[in-house]
Length: 400
Image (cartoon, rainbow, N blue to C red):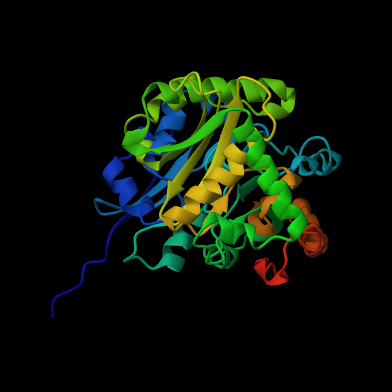
């Protein structure tokens, strides 16, 4: 009888994703729905100085079986909660932790930096036992947090299919919501308009007409269609928009980040560029989206001048029209803005999951999490009770 040799697992922590072979990482990341955990995207965040300058210190966990990468978790050490879009400040120095005399920061965080889009999870090879490898990775995280005196580990905007997996390993869920458009079998933009009541259909048509009356033409550009200079111009639009909103502008990305999207990540990029009748080279406004498979994600936008309704057309209507034509089923337009619900984006649940290493924080979170989640569900229901649709069955299920 030949003795079967057990595979040898080893874990390591990496301060930069460049230390992990791209082909090995992407073998785990490319099959996922989300584009935001792919090596090129995360590498660009780091090499453009977008993460470190904003206080996101990479601490990626990787698991090897012999010489094969079988597990990975993009993780970051943080001394603040900025750029997460999950408002956990009441746990930190200003509130609960401070009152208990607990040092809340640094914390360990799992998410794609500055990206409030659902899809975070551990990257695990398909031939591995997911629960077994998750247990191993959580044990490594627990040991790391104990060694570095870290109070909490948080995974934000988690993949809904992964949430029950990580919950089985001691993490607790916190409900939030985003505004998400879902294709209800639309074949044309008119089909999308037909979902609204008469008043809102008129409003949308009026808003698109205002852009046309201003003498603007909107073009969708993706992949090789995108001229290289547009990537740098997108930074100018992004920067200007962030400056207008001051502290709330969330200007985390550098010009280098946008420029480095060309050419290796251009296949994921969709620009909606607005050109005037007198200049077809330099857009007066532009939105930046990413796409993968049947998913579309809105990111940033800006304009050189205030043009009535251009924001709505460049960020919502034209991307929706493009999505319908491309067979896209889900469009996440980005963080914030209740005005999205008036344009066909119902409030849709998403979750973060949390683990506290201080017993009082754990007790408080578990004591109140059901109540907090119930209140959030009530908020979701209230928002969706006020949608301008003809039929309520266009609202996605939001049950806990």
